[in-house]
Image 1: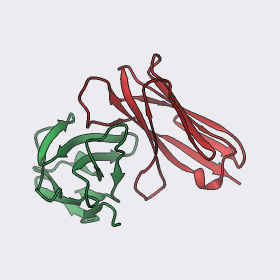
Image 2: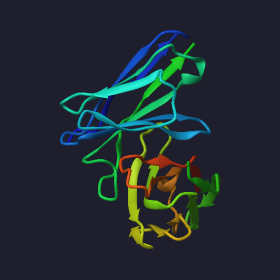
Image 3: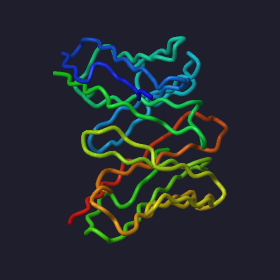
Image 4: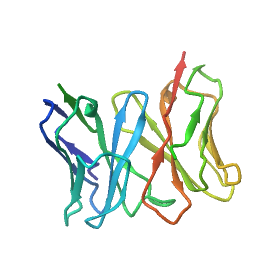
Length: 115
Length: 112
């Protein structure tokens, strides 16, 4: 069974540009969550999508947005990039909304560097 | 809202034990534990529900004290393969499922 796939693995962008990251969940998983990981900050929750609807959102500015398609694949977009957006962006899928019986399965992440 | 993990880092010799704690200021519905090795994705270890549940898998076990809003991860007779960063993820007991908030992580290094 294929795991969570994130593309691309690495991205280098310039301040002010925008970027789109892609995530393909495990087959049969309907929930996709996005996290930003930086040294010292751990895993910061961005948002969670379930059945094409954003169900939860973290404390990130509106420059961070996402969507989920009918096949559960998800994309995350960051506009007007800032240097502080440099991070590892992790996508995680779960069968249902994450709860006691639905753990997260993480992808290997997209490493974004903003120069 | 982010849970607090302690210690931030720990260094062990093979065979030694370790305890990692996770505390929340909010009432919790469940606690998840994950381990991330350097350069890899976090991997699920176990989930605990409110009710003082304790779970275990071989030499790694965990407990959840609902009243204290705390969870602890116990690693006994540590092996080199236990090295990595451990994260607790908390689901707040407010009926809003689907949002898992992680602590800042505890880095564990096991030496021969």
